[in-house]
Amino acid sequence: MERTDDSAPVRVAELATWQISRLHRHAHQLLADRLAAAGFRGYDYRLLAALEEDGPASQVALGQRAGLDRSDVATTVDRLAARGLVRRSPHPTDGRQKIVELTPDGATELESLTVVVREVQDELLAPLAPSDRAEFLRLVAALLA
Image (cartoon, rainbow, N blue to C red; front, side, top):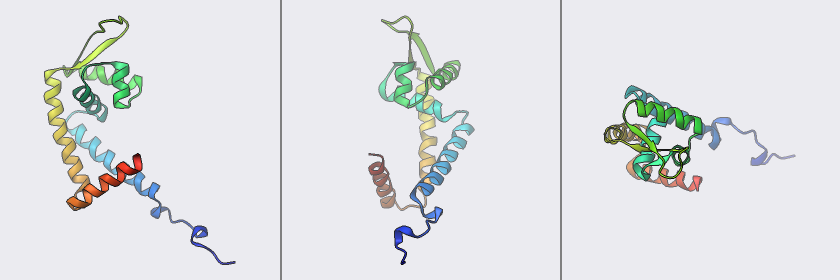
C-alpha cells in the first residue's frame, strides 16, 4: 500500500503549533526580562495600559479588560497602589466595590514601560524586513480572528 502525504510521520519541528509555542515562550521571556529590569511584571503593564485606554474601572471590570483572573487583579492593584501608580476610590453606587484609576505617576510610568514594550517588539521582529513585519502581524490577526 502506498503512503500518502497525510500518512507520513509528522516532524514536530514542522508543526505550526510547535513553532507558535516556541515563539510565544521566546517573546514572553524577552518581555518578562525587560519589564523585570524596569521593576515591573507583565500584569502591571496590562493593568496600567487598560486604565489608560479605557479609564477608571472596578477591579472586576479591569480584570475583564486585561484578561486577568480576579486574584491576579487584586494582587496587582495592591502592588501598583503601594507604588502610587493607581488609586482606589469608593464606587459611587456600590459600596462593596472600589474604582481603580491611573495616577499621574502611573501615567508617566506607563509611558516609560511602553518604550520598553516597543523595544521588545523591535527586538523580536528584528529578523523581518518592515514589509514582512506588517505581513506577519496581518497573518497573526487572521489566525486569531
